[in-house]
Image 1 (tube, rainbow, N blue to C red):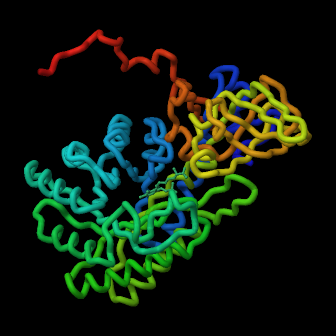
Image 2 (image 1 turned 90 degrees about the horizontal axis):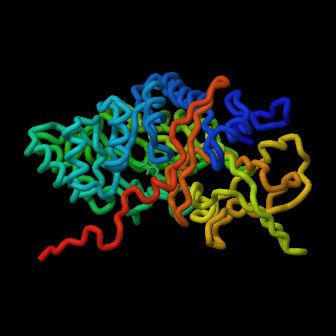
Length: 438
Ligand code: LLP
């Protein structure tokens, strides 16, 4: 599991760095990212497009893991960046990410966020609904600044994944509905506007998807509407953004496709329909998050207490849990793990791995075979690079972990561990600043 290997000491080594050494230096829990893995995956997406000989952009869906260092790596790799909030946009600006390659998503962008994006001159806004569109029109008008947009539509496709992360179906909070003519109305409104420029169409059908047919069905559904819009409105898109959602391997049961296959399937479908309907071939954009960073990340925890209930179960607790990885509690997500300091140990017992939060639901892994462990051993949980740190929280006032990038035997701490002072830094004492508003 994971991208690491076992070194001579029987320790887990990632990116040429012994994880037990990282723990001595930085403590636990610790997120360790294998930079090479991210680089290889970015390369796989890019070369698949290049082989198809088509104009493209690969935008990293930064919600999967956003930090200044991560954005700088993404820039180095020549990818674009998808942000979904003022906070992600701010982080991108702080990382000096080229603004023209930033795309802004979200179903409830505020006027302030829209204004920030327009003033900074980012690459495009993915417009989600009429409220946002009217704000964007007013803001670009008053600033006299243009903004390119894609309109997000729900193609009416259901991807085979967890319902919480499935987004392509008609009954969704995201995007303009096609069936009722809302997408068409949005296109007409934009076509008439001086400052808002329609670059194309966007669809994202869901996340952790293992098949290509959801994407090809989406392309088909979109093109059926594009044909109508071409005939009725004379509209043809320059860009077709097909979102992200490519699945990764968490456990032995997951069998993800090579990343190239998703790209090939999508591009082939786009080429097919563009030709069939006699339309100009658009640029194809994608927005992978999980598939760029998920498998690159490993979390190292220290094992603490142990509770054996005879004939029932053995609970082994670690020093993190739903505060650094909420996915098992939220989606019943499954993970694989090994003991980082006993990688050559034989699996000897069946245990369940508990987090340290005061919640019975705070379980990281149910029923896993591991070598016999004791307090102080290190548990490595694999494929935690996406939606782990980015969904981390301070429940029970637990500190967010540190994040380390490793590459070619070198390590770099890119996010420091939170401190107890960080926890209270925005707080003031009771009655210390009471104000009378009357
Ligand atoms: N584009 C859009 C418009 C999205 O909404 C998402 C993910 C992506 C791209 C990237 O999807 P990815 O390639 O990472 O699958 N917290 C959940 C996942 C939520 C996904 C939200 N949108 C999880 O931990 O599984």
